[in-house]
Image 1 (cartoon, rainbow, N blue to C red):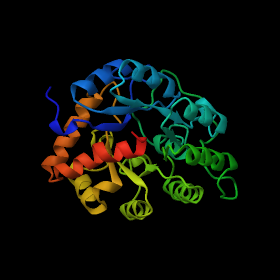
Image 2 (cartoon, one colour):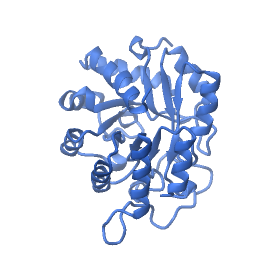
Image 3 (cartoon, rainbow, N blue to C red):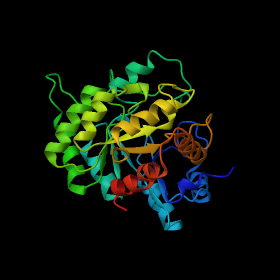
Amino acid sequence: MPFHPLLEGAIDLHMHSGPSIFPRRQTDWELVEDAKRAGMGGLVIKSHEAPTADRTTLIRLKEPQMHVYGGIVCNTFVGGFCPQAVDVAIRSGGKIVWMPTISAREHQAHFARRNTRFFQAGKPLVHAGEGLTIFDRDGAILPEVREIVALVAEADVVLATGHLAPDEVLALASEARNQGVRKLLIQHTDLGIARIRFELERELAGKGAVLEKCYLACSRDFADITVEEMADSIRRLGARSCVLVTDYGQLHNMPAAEAFSEFVGRLSACGVNDDDIRTMIVDMPRELLGV
């Protein structure tokens, strides 16, 4: 299929590929080949179960013209809120540190109510208790989370909110700001797993956070928002407060680069102008990754 011309130099900060314990549409190499055909400048490979900095380093050695990066998700499979694991991921070239996703308490509560094709790994995964939260029993942020935030601030990489609940996102944003984190990414704000209401989106953007506008939220899998509604929210928030991502890579969905192209085309058809789209898929991702 022909890719949208606006993808030239674009970077998607949220793509999934294999190897993975979850069914994926493409391997890392197949994903990168698609991105090259689309004229993209790069992408970020995210894994719920393992760090991706090492494998993306290998990709860059073979494809030095592509900005392909990874990071680490603070799920139980890497020790949860483990500063040592985060430190090694950053030292290995990781560009994003994600808070828990499928190990998050909010995630587990949400999917306990849903029958879904997502996050199926053959047999049930072993999780810790009711899931991870950044709060201790008194409602204070855990010391190990504060230590992770400090590591992110020191390295000037991206701190992403994962599948935390909105109250956790707000508390983490405050902690990040206090510790000097310059790059805070509020993930898939429109996705129903832990949806961020518009008023909170605007508040977070006003404090310098960047909001993920995620195509998966518009898909049949979730259908939490229409593309038209997303376009309207982008206009109200401003393009420099947003990045466009797909969160695609699942076996049953179209290839991620094709989804990125379709997403851009549909937003354009909804009246989002080319300059704003380029801001959200080229300028803002490059600023966040420091490339």
